[in-house]
Length: 403
Image (cartoon, rainbow, N blue to C red; front, side, top):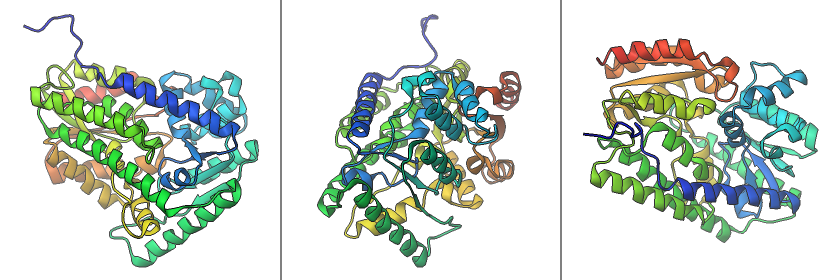
């Protein structure tokens, strides 16, 4: 009989390695800023390009996750609101603007000062205005890589347009940082990126096993290096360590939670301020999340002969840059591939691009797969928009269907 004092979930041993990687990432960002070689980038930006040119990237969205996890989202978002920004604006943007305005009152005194702001609108259109606001506060110039939304397959003229944007990006970085692009260096960075993403993808796919070796919170935390440091050689060791641990769990029949009963899909960014309480709370009821739409977005390779074209193809083809049909198809495929019993869609108040269409998607996914789902509402950083009682009621209603 299991020890009654055991937790419902199992912590990853590779978590210590993750902390070391992210600590190095923070130190590198600070050093790069002091050396005049730091660029802020959006989460869907082709980070391999600045890395190959000797420019260190820093991710404000990841800083927003830190703000959320430390439960100071309302404070930092409030600083931005004092400047006149609406509470309806993306809470990543508000926490970023707020921390730049009031660094002394922010975790880690905010992100290091950037010398350039590199945005790609494949995740949303807010990023350009957000970075324009940061530019006014830091004097860092803004570059936008424009990736028009696609509905189905990418048209050749679409790829050519984005590829020209990549070429202009290289020119912008060359001028701003007095550097140049060496294609051999880009190939090396691309190889590192592909290797890390391959290990990450295999870790995700291992969750098709029963019991699932990873839960949602595990993936949301361990995705950090592949988001921020794709192309860096030292994250490969971390993802090999993670995959080895995941593979070992599968071989031994060990699950991320101790008593797996219900397998669900998660859609959207998590509530960072509730990430452990929410997912570990459900783990106590036998609920595990073997797949989600967010962490599965970090896949693909840019290796090949025509690197700029491959970058254009990969980064304009991301999950959020597609239409509703593609999103529904992705959810249905994950439900089938991971043999899931249902799904939870998190309607994030301030992330319109991700949450748009969820009411329709919910019905379409259930119709296509036959599994039930529920929509809960809240925010990823700003806990003022998160109603615990309402969310619990809706989740309970879903779980009753499996009783």
